[in-house]
Length: 114
Length: 115
Image 1 (cartoon, each protein chain N blue to C red):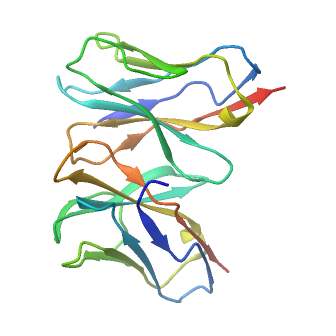
Image 2 (cartoon, helix red, strand yellow):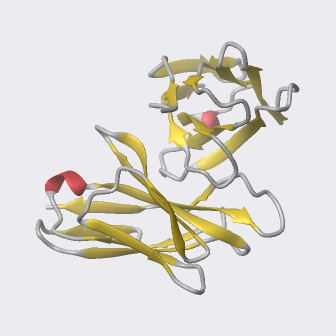
């Protein structure tokens, strides 16, 4: 069974600084999808970024970028120029294919300090 | 706004009761997923429907059931409720007929409190 592990329960960062969140996963599949979702205090689940395993290029979305290391089964999220609105829980998620369930990690709470 | 709607936003009920949560997917999405988020279990997949048919089942209790209707909206029925069923229930949708097939977009969730 696929598992997703986020080893950092909580992280804090100063506004405008950079923070990197770790995620590792276990799978025997060669093709799959990885996601980072953000859950602010409103509890809404918001897609931050996604990565297709067959793509070697790391995905970026504005201030958010990933470091995808397929061999190491690692998928970290870097938040650059952190803003107060980035304060949230961040969940790493895995899906074996389009249309399949998401398996989530336990989440990392990020606190951006002014 | 993800385009996925869920009602009600909040639900308070008593043990032993039955409730129905409703979800409308994004326009064009054929698949609906239900997830439960609780403090002790984290985010867990419950069940998935695709174009009206059950497609996959996760850790869904026998007391829980779901269906997807011809207009693609879905309902999650929770019966014989227990204190431990208190959680945030999310609906997500994906498999758009036009684009972005693999990404699941989440609704705002229904917060269930069983007293």
